[in-house]
Image (cartoon, rainbow over all chains, first blue to last red; front, side, top):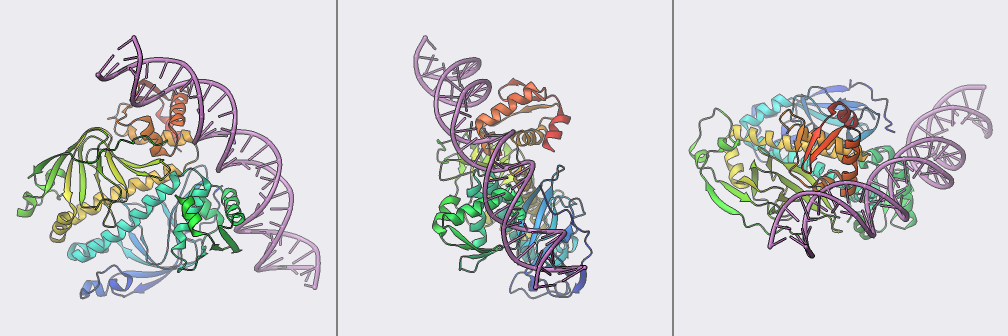
Length: 234
Length: 234
DNA sequence: CGATTGCTTGATACCTCTCAACCCAGGTGG
DNA sequence: CCACCTGGGTTGAGAGGTATCAAGCAATCG
């Protein structure tokens, strides 16, 4: 069921990051950079496709911000099934945890570039800088909000509904043209929506027959009838 | 499908609350109460069963903390279906939103007592008091964490799995004895798990036949075989 | 006592999963 | 150049599980 067996252990290319926090959007705009902020311990990291960023159970020592590429957060059930909780794209911050360890693992969908911040340092900075606190809070609320929306999708009954909602979500990243560039495989989509790869494939084919979309390329979806898709998404 | 048509408009019994924030757990322990904290604008509110606390789309002006009773956060789809996102019990804080309005509605499952905090005031206090910021962050992380767990449940395939997970979650509230007191109806459970009321009922009956649980009362579930239930929950 | 509400049970239809075959593009090596 | 292999995707047939529709049951309340 769940593919993605070869999640190799993380040993990415590290590189010190002396950028101020605002360069990666964790410091409020307009505030003068403090000494701590200027030499903030953000570390730029590169991950090749399918490399694991952190594992379920690892100590949750970092927050990550996506600079480029796509990341998936996923959980593996003990029978091998996989549930993808979220995809993170440029600008998203992930790695928030209530406890001391990650409760989910993160992997690179495409090869990608991240900036990692030590959690303790971020928290310490937030103690001194209320603006940073606000930024953190806002980033968390965005992540929270998306997870809640995802839960609503998973609760939906039909496959068509789920796929339509998925397309609607990614239509936002298509820069106005209705051409959605998929970074992930069908298996990723299936595990994200709680469906099987076959059902995803069949549903897309059906959408194509119904002239709702076109599939010029295996990783491209042209939205032809947004209204009908949105109606399906209800 | 979705019951709960009669969500009456909110007009609960208001009562000024001059309690310090720590009395309701939003101020860090040990810190001396400041002047603002002492007269914090928390308002105790009572809601009778099934009364709406706030509606989807209302301005998100308050955070709520549950003093007693159970609250459900739910979303109504335009075809009448209902998805319950979470149940909140004593001690839980809810009402977090990334935007200016609520994206979900909240209703009293049982008659319940809440403390409402004006969002702006909480945020203003948090600006002066980093400890409060930390508390807020922690409360949010807990809520976030539970929503993520719920998404994983909804992604699950079988009805038995979902119901077992639901029971496992509420077993924690049963004070050690395996006797789970259900505050909600079967319909609530169904809408929470993304199932129908009939399937929930059948699954519980099957569990009873398999000696996993006993149903002494319609609102009580005695867990007889926690190991087997946990195995089902995987 | 009848009406209502919440729940259970039954029969059937529908949808998705499962298993299997097939297709297609890309890469490799003879 | 072509045969072969591989990975990702599509398509098909059948089984299984859940939704749907309908009826029945028990407790509660006028």
